[in-house]
Image (cartoon, rainbow, N blue to C red):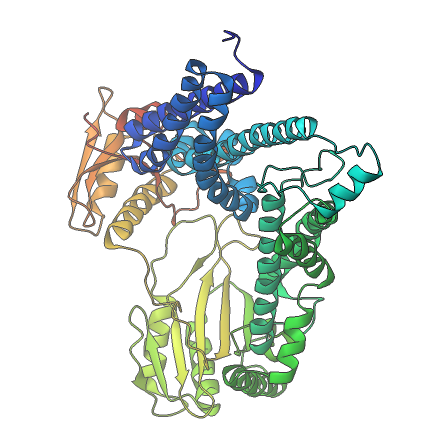
Length: 598
């Protein structure tokens, strides 16, 4: 027996050892990320690959211990299991190629901390493509062995040569017993080696996927057209534009490749269904322009009942808003702004049009006049109630000059906190509601411009009117912020206002910060960390959201880092991974879990 390993055995062994090495590196990296962030979910996905990979590696190593002919018999089991695991991986790799091509390379450009948080998802995803390459490489070895076996059988097959006429007659009258055919037997009578089809199963699967995608595109187009969201292919919206892009560029390129190889396989493939289906599926995918069949089908069925109702409401809303504009501005409002006509613009699921009336440039509050104008305008056009933040519970309107409505409107607009700020601040919203045949909402706010705006300390007014055939669940007043978020924001605002009102005092002066905390409105524990120089740069806060304390940096506002001047309010909170990291790189509003004394 030769001690030299055949080339095909060496190829398999190297293939599986390299794949195992890549897998082990992936496991090590994901484990490191898991230790850092405490999330081990990615390890479960990687562990699923372990049994098959270990089996393939061990099975390929055992081929050294037997003669080559025995190895060829044994390797059939390995190939069988490789195909059972490899084909699903290949299908998944094809289906997930576009998002994978976008997301997996992002791991290389993310910041180190973000890489750790994404490793558990993106690394196992990338391993799917590693195993797909392994499967295709093993398939190449399998096909090489198959082609070699066919060639050897063809070379060993005897060619009948008649010696004389009697032999020829005897041969014709008494045919030799037929040998049983096997899938490995040559198919030509001349001893010629038949040509193997080129990855027939792979291209059939690709053709099926193309056909399924084409049908999905047409079903999507049908549904969108039925819903009134797809009038023509010129402006189909983001969802369908994405389908078009994939179909026209990637789908057509793949379809052309499958069609070419389907034609090549026609004379080589012995499986009738496969040789017929592959080019037909590819031709079908190439022939259908995205959306044509779906739109044609929707043309026969017409719009859905929901879409018909939405279109009718969009027409009513559009007419009502346009008539409102033509009747003139509410008294005191000078301009029209932000006009949305959802009948003309086909606003997808939203039939509601809107318009905004504005007044700009006053240098004193005109809340009394603007409220009186808005209340009268709303009542004249069918308003039945008014409401205020934060819960917007409706209160019935009595008249066009309803005293209670006017008083509460002035309170909402003029009595919000007047603070030192760089950019505009909106007042609370005063809402007027119509719940008649044409439902609508009218919102009035006062906007106090800031020192960094073009017209510092001006007062502007915005009066927005829209129909509410489809109520917006996220209208102003639906507070989405937690109590703890408000507590942190108000803490930062208190410190920021103290600094803006005392520009000549050190931003971290101990007395300045303590005085700011005296005005803090929330009853939660706030503990300043006093440095040796008497200054306060960090405070420990325990909000209503979580029993665990957090350390918050109140470093001076860094205009270069933040990109804007100190706004005076609306700061928000960012996060650091630890108190140590926070102190190494402090910025106003950054926080980390733990006490500042750690």
